[in-house]
Length: 179
Image 1 (tube, rainbow, N blue to C red):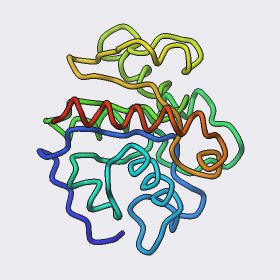
Image 2: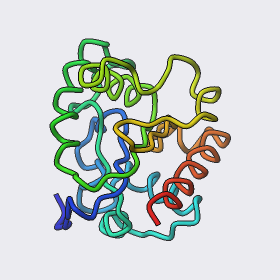
Image 3: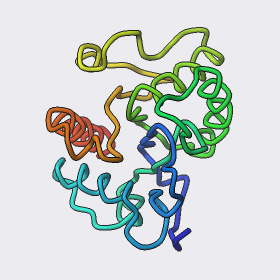
Image 4: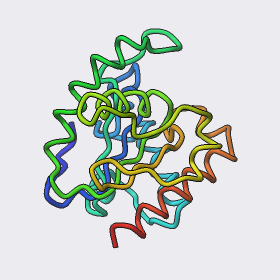
């Protein structure tokens, strides 16, 4: 882990991706030039948020995490794993008292957040349906804005230009909310 300073009271946006990479050296907070951070920095810069490091992302009020806390060992992640990890995610999110926005980066993050939401409020925050259709609506959890979005990490981010554009729009909108 690099020497980064996380001040929970300064975190305004929590960006929840799906799962950590298979190689721990590619995780957001790893030293060197981790791949997950590389594509995330690109997403921020595409949104007009000039950042060059994980510390600069943190200084902007963003905290990066994953819904599932262990790397995928096959293409998909079981519903049981997502549900179990949502318990850990729930405990993690409580650590940040000043959050105004949750960004759910991909289907696994949306499912995990909905498991948590359903446990705590009795209903899903994000309705079922393709992300490109439902993302036009505004969603809230405990008065905080929630964005269903797309995964900003890994190889797919570099390929799918339309999703990259949507991610950059979501990031820019999140920044407007916290300013």
